Image 1 (tube, helix red, strand yellow):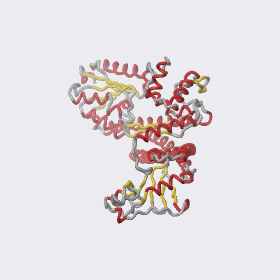
Image 2 (spheres, rainbow, N blue to C red):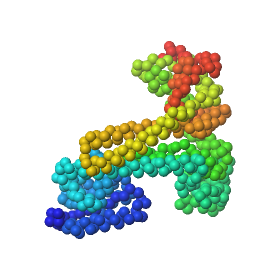
Image 3 (cartoon, rainbow, N blue to C red):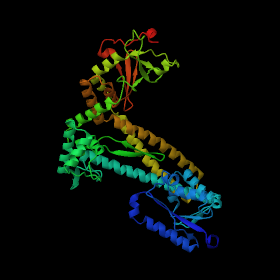
Image 4 (cartoon, one colour):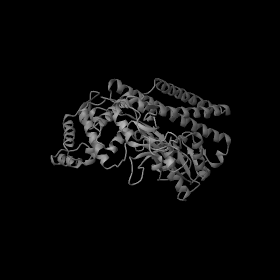
Length: 514
């Protein structure tokens, strides 16, 4: 190879997935391999190297937005000669995507004229070599193994965090060293920082007394009290964050990370009560949250408490508010189906809003008492899916090893079938996770209490009432004798008006309405 590569330029590509790996040997090892290979094969290793440090190849970030994408752009723009060499430790540094997508990335690089060298086995991949079926299949098998290793690591990590969450619930054992600034860890337990706790209580007391965020921050700065964050002074944004933080009453909500392509989303799990030492009484905390709701509702105009909740039982479209009758003889406002109003095939008749609002306000407690919780069968299905996914991962790992030794089309087909099954199971499990969270007794009871307490002293603020209803309800399908309530956890219940009261008059004179 030395004669063919003499004086040709080479560029090293170095990647590792987590920032913590920069403290280890990975960077030095990958750099040394590139230097040694270039010297041994007569390549001119360029001073510029391409590094994706702490960038994942499992989701393709390095290829889409990382240094690898910058390398390809430089080749396409002519800044890097097309007959250059790209030196990588192994193919999994380039990609850990599914084998088909990973192989496509390798093919894209080689199609530009670049020779890709894997330093762990001294193999050279070019456009011509990838046209060799055996060489291409071996590359695909390496990508299959890399992807499955990432999946297994991900599930193992998830299992470890599930175990930590379980210990946090059962014994309040800290899951991480990250805790609120007014607490500290001593002898493996979370304890209060008394000085900072006094500051937090001062902030809550002032806010309840009517002092605003900016004024509270000014008071702390005037007293010479230093903030415990990186800033030199207290700011209104941090005061507000403290006032809205449920950790002050001991609540902790763990999250899991969900990937959707390159997008990462933090999904909240069930709140762990009493995980942290409470430093503020729950009554004080929820009074403060009610004050936030009042402030929000003043700037948010809602004409009725069912805004964006009321749905048509016939066509499932939104029911909106509209006044009916002539200007001189206008009656009470009504809920009307948007499709019916547009004469788009729905014949739903308008319903008066006021009797329906009265019904919900008066009977909110028994209505909310019907909120369904997670069924035992859903919990069992979640455990079953987790076990099945684990076993599929083990099967895929074994099949990948078998394919690396002796390629078989039937085994390859089995791999694709198992991957499809796993994807479907993961999607079902994620849905069940959401349902279980929204159906947990703790979540339902806390939200139910908040809503009931608000409606006990309902002051006619439709916007605030709407926010409270939305905390528990996704949709309400209003019919003439009953309504179907779709709760946040996806379950439904039916409420018949006559069960609570005499038949309420919700019919509208359609002739005057139109």
